[in-house]
Image 1 (cartoon, rainbow, N blue to C red):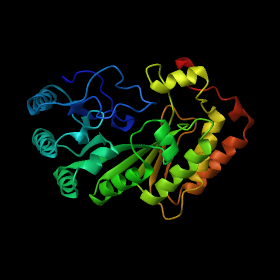
Image 2 (image 1 turned 90 degrees about the horizontal axis):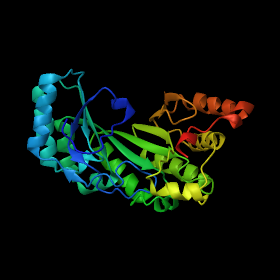
Image 3 (image 1 turned 135 degrees about the vertical axis):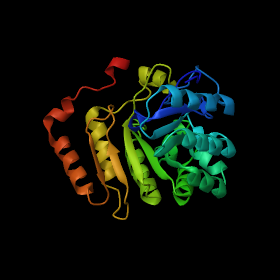
Length: 292
């Protein structure tokens, strides 16, 4: 692949063919994110570049039926270009699943008709960073959006038929705002009822703007015990009408599980309650110590 700079993809797409559609991120101002800081400017790659990469994969590498359209938010590319890329992929591979990252801004900018065309063309899953349902936390993290905008964008994606997978970052509000982060994130998830939501634990690297506040003590990171408690406080507020798949399956997390709501929620809560009662939980070593 001839993409310049950083390439990221969701862990679940680890074995997917990566086709670079965009480079960088259209926003690139989130204070917790270090991926594109000082690395590259955003751009949409040319159709020739993208098609050349598709051909490179077709002629030289294995294929498992899954494609991830790479870029910080590949959905930001023009709709007509995305459809041409999807069509070319389907011509060259026996594709089973196509996905990409998206920002709520991308979803809000595209018309319902455009989103429907993309879904009908074969784009199936959109991975979107909700991060938090708290306007306070979103503002502090310079996410560039609000809870209401997140809800509107998510519903728009669901209505278009996409398999929407939302990310929630545990610990994003730090010690000071853990309660409002938990409560208002649950409120947003209850309103959206996304097909999928996933938890990730805040993990800061030195090039993230928030890292300096962590080092100075202005931002106080949650302990492993407090992180598990915040996760519990989100899930216990999820209402019975929510039918999402839930994944707490990342290497950054302190407890791994997955399930389907509402039937698996009692088991999830029971598991977390047991962990919180276990004296060993308070002795867990933070996974981020090696980044300090």
